[in-house]
Amino acid sequence: MGYWLLILLLYSASSSMAPTMFRSLLVDIGLSLSDIGWLLGIVGTIANMLGGIVAGLLIAPLGRKRSLIVFSSLWTLSMMIYLLPAFGVTNLPVLYLVACAAFLTIGMMTTATFTIMMDKSTLESPGTDYTVQSSVGLLGSIGAAAISGVIAGAIGYRGVFALSGAIALISVIIIAKVFDTDKSSAT
Image (cartoon, rainbow, N blue to C red; front, top):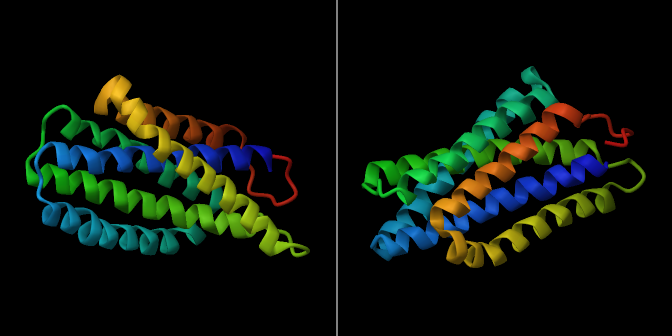
């Protein structure tokens, strides 16, 4: 379970750090609050739901581990797309591409992750097991969101998005190398 908790921590940190700073970037480039609300609140949420639906349809045929690898690889690529606006490519179609790619893939990754979290919960204490896993993920999210502004202040948006992508890549490597979907596994 140790590697799985590490995956949850890293995945959650990466998936929180980049979107938190993307919102700030949208403000800094001069997008109106209504444009930001539409982009992230409506379009992003729809993309996230579609990602969850697609993942739900693919998890059974692909299997748990393969789904996690495929979805987390797509999610890692989407983390790198955040670099486009950080390098000044800020027209609306690109911003919509960034938001849709990120939200779609995080929806896919989240669906696979939650499925495996349920699998890794024992029959003896499913609520506690799921809560521990969920809490580790939330700690990663909250911690990354809390420090993302400080990191952006030190290394800029490009640095934050690159760091988020690197953390995502590390979690993909851990998934591919050591992750086991067996409940009883020590990994």
